[in-house]
View 1: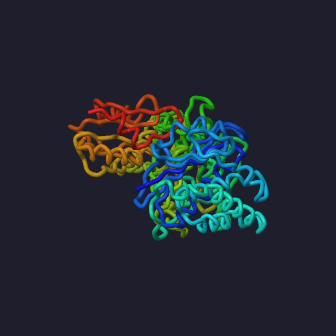
View 2: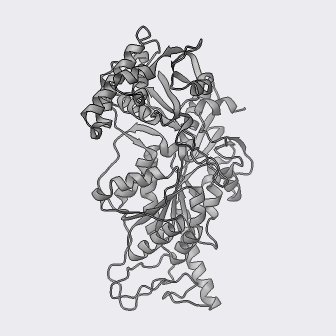
Length: 550
């Protein structure tokens, strides 16, 4: 069984802090946890929420409804009360209401030491309503707030205990999974991307902060000393893209993090990397556009932009992890591919995946650098862009015996500018042979549980919701499966054969079914139906199953 808890309130009330405390406590109790956030682009006011779904079985996504709603404001109650599941409970701070337990959380927080601790009171109420002992929550508070001093820790634990007291008489009214043995470790998508980059051997990270990619940047900054990484906040995304090009030319494994608007500014630098054949990695964490759009919400609107970004034609490789574990794996793979093919690689995530938290088997944290494919002893006759059958030229670093000459203009194999049109044709064909080589090594999709009559086609973060939808539909006798692509470009050459003869329903967080259109462009599908969402919120398995039509 599973239960979903939602903490809702205004920005500045510590909604996220309360959610993270509960997530940590439930994880330590041996429950499977999947946490998600929904927040507005504002510092104070509005309605933010944090969902913590818990179960005695593995979870892959969030839920639309909640079994416990802890509403810290009347506005958040009005917004979220329609999402309370049948038999669920609402704890509302302050004024009594016919549909909620009226619990004066603010007064309890003041008694514990200050109104700002209302979030800790709410966390205590949640524990009481679920029938759990408060000690795991107290430990989570101690761990999270240890740097703030014993007084702060003690006051917040007292606030949580007062929350338990407020809920007296309502303990255990919500059915909750039974705790077990602690499972794995908790990671967010941002942390998984950052850890993947760090262990892959990234040495230069240069970014301009942009939601929702900033979490990976701050994580990398937090582990910079451990992994000996230079982390630089650039003045803008143009600088960031060009700086990592310079770092890659000098031999450093380099990356940047951004979102759609920042990626638009990086397009020229991306094209530069294509011409100079530099192994850079870009984390592109999507949010709804166009323009500023909904900067704190989720979407999958930048796929075709990423595939075609940068003027001119040059190879690029794009991964779109569907799970937190894949966020680690695909980031490492992006560095491997970038170095192997000497071309840009992009890791596409979105707000849903980067902010989500889940407990999974512990990810390897030891430094395990990918092969940079560096020519260690180039001779005096070395030329940087030697024409080869594969299109991949030996890569040496500046500072040695050989001259390493690069040019953003078209160039001859030795890197010097040229306007010789025969040379231009030869160099362009050399570069594009790498695209064919990368395509030959593209990853196949993951089918779950096995190929069937109807395929829910998905990519990126829709993995979990689609997987849950398949389970719901198959329980009803529907012959449905999921095909999830974690590499979206180049498209796996076998896609057409794998999907042939099956009904394809593309599930995407955009309004135009961009991945299905891409597959059609590649000849992998000719007809498809679609289930699309583009309101800034993530899919859930229940929603996809509800919208599925035979």
